[in-house]
Image 1 (cartoon, rainbow, N blue to C red):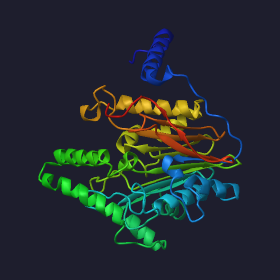
Image 2 (image 1 turned 180 degrees about the vertical axis):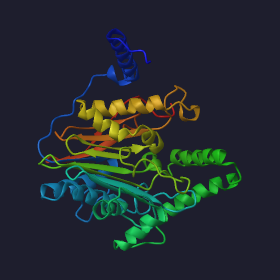
Image 3 (image 1 turned 60 degrees about the vertical axis):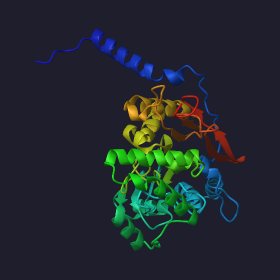
Image 4 (image 1 turned 90 degrees about the vertical axis):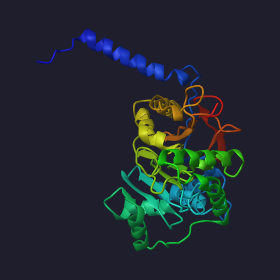
Length: 377
């Protein structure tokens, strides 16, 4: 017969659990908590690259999405149209056309979409030959009973839906960067898989340090979240993934609850940075559920980052301080219009930022870092 726990023991156990949770949150809870300003009306939030690339009208991703929302467009249609600007930008090496390829030089793209009011979603992974994977993910949501299609079959689905399939998704810029990485790593191709992966990562980080790749583009990704005047929320995440990844590797971006999560009655969250860390923690789901339980966006994001820290114990993933040697960033929006961008660290040379567009126009704001300095410090 199982021993029953009495009320005193139950309360003691619960208190210990609460203390453990508090200890995990020490790094951020001691700092002043900044509650994001409540915003009336539509709002769009994205990663910083959502306020860089521009379309023919001169609109950035967040500005385009905001314009469509205020014009009466469906909120998901708006944010997808926004990220399409970045996916089609030949100068952007982290998303869509011209994204940095896998180790064999093949551009494989991932994307996911979630529609809050409809409670529907769609995603694609390892998609080759289509410049706008976010639109294919949206078709998965609209035309199938499934949430995720991958690889050659995702490409076949895209072809059947009328998307143009291209043999080569490289731009001159992305090909040049890949060839330089290949030159540096060719002598290592006889190493065992684990040592080879480490050598590939060393070469990639060296190229970041030398200016071949912008730090935020080594991992790649754009996340965009939108809220309309009716309180309807939706989101999209799209990426070319980790530069020089093992062919077939899928990170967090197309996985619901990891790279993107939307709950129509609560809000939305998305992520960029080290996909494996966020995928293991299901960070975006954790953020949204934390908001459901009463947290404001910033606090929910910090709690998710603290969860990533607690789950990172391998020595190869730790810096000299014993903290994660990588960055993770969350972009967060609730149905009240409150928003936040939080990051594990500040950027390599400047504070990481995120993009926002309201009736006051597009802006780029600093994220709140969990730890000061850079990941490798």
